[in-house]
Amino acid sequence: MENFGHLADRHERHAFLHRYFRSHQCFFVFSVTYKPGWHTTILPPFFVLGAIFSGVATVIVVMVAIRKYYGLDKWVTDYHLDRIAAFLLALTCFWLYAMLVEHLLTIYVGKPAEMKIIFDRFFGRFSLMFWIMFALCCIVPLFVLAVPKWRTIPNLVIVSILINIGMWLERYVIIVPSAINTKLPWAKAYYFPSWVEIAITAGWVSGFILLLMLFTRFFPSITVWEVKEGLHETAHKAQPVLVASTAKENA
Image (cartoon, rainbow, N blue to C red; front, side, top):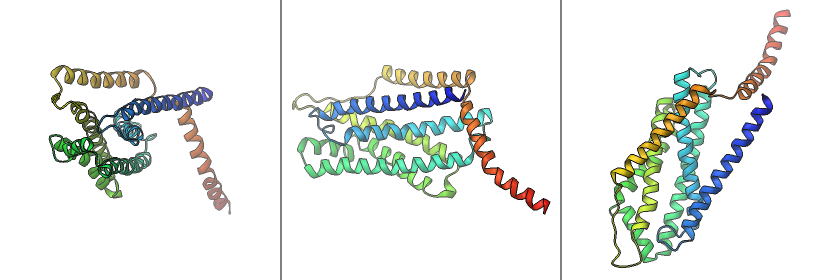
């Protein structure tokens, strides 16, 4: 069982690397196209960082829900949630830095087509989405997670949900303004998702939740070898304390 656990852990690392390079390759293709808003060298790592950012937020929501429903407070402790909250805070700082670098470099170059995209994001028709995204992904997490006494489990879940909403808006703000601004002066377009696209997105989200519920129903939520290793470490740390207390009683 222990060997199987190490094999599963190695498989998870390989799957993560595969998703990382696939996401990086996807937005590398975006960045090499001479499209205003996409033609930046920081776009591929910025996209991957955003994927990790929203992924950690999703893991927090799922972890807290499974912990509450199955009563896994003994295995998923408040200490674990506090550590992952600190990690989410660090990712928030990294994401803020990458976003500032992307926009500052674009403003420094000052190409008219690029500046039009920046203006649409900051003050134009996409400004509401952009500033809501900035508040949900940066301002709220920084203020809540940076204060230890506010880093409670309900606040952590709320912040994680808001981050996922903000990251969806961020993808929309990245893709749509550049896609609808073509180089042809007469080829202007506007985009709003149709009910079919909204239904497909809702279906994918519902399907993910259904598959996750089925998985946690028929398979263990925590791997056995991790639980065994955790118990071994706990017993190893407690052994010197027991020895000292026994020696004190004998004396």
